[in-house]
Amino acid sequence: MSRIAIPTTIEAAPAASQTALREVEKQLGSAPNLFRLAAQSPAALEGYLGIFGALGKGQLPAPTRERIALAIAEYNGCDYCLAAHTYLGTKLAKLSAEEIAANREGRSTDAKADAAVRFAVAVATARGHASDADLAAVRAAGYDDAQIIEIVQHVALNVWTNYLNSVAETEIDFPVVTTAKAS
Image 1 (cartoon, helix red, strand yellow):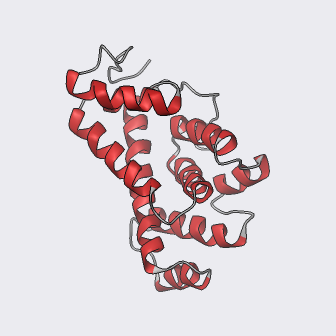
Image 2 (cartoon, helix red, strand yellow; image 1 turned 45 degrees about the vertical axis):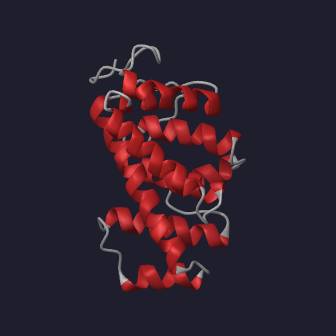
């Protein structure tokens, strides 16, 4: 049971969040617990959806975004996000089980994506103070400054969802997957 109340329906959420939740439901087929949890603060939900939507229009392909989300969820020990992104990575981004396992280890089986995932984990580990070598490695793999900025923003967005779900102990509403830290 969540330590922060999650509205059980869209109608039970604050009125200012209901339109956004209906849009999430239209896009995903449901309004997962994370979105209904964030909906308790209409401003937080709006901010989350705004950044998420903007990054969806960015230069990083969806599979790379999911790879980063998986790596950061594992790094932060967030079972909810790991379960959600394992599901989304498999169903939407079409990542293989081998790739998801690699992402959870902070790497990728794809050479270019490997640099992005490793850089994302370096950013998280160093709390933003990535080294010159980290930056050189992601650039050497072909990422430009705009893409590097997007990687950093994906890390920040995923850290926020990881922290929110860990604080709330959000009930997992995806097929359950647990992080190594949870074991």
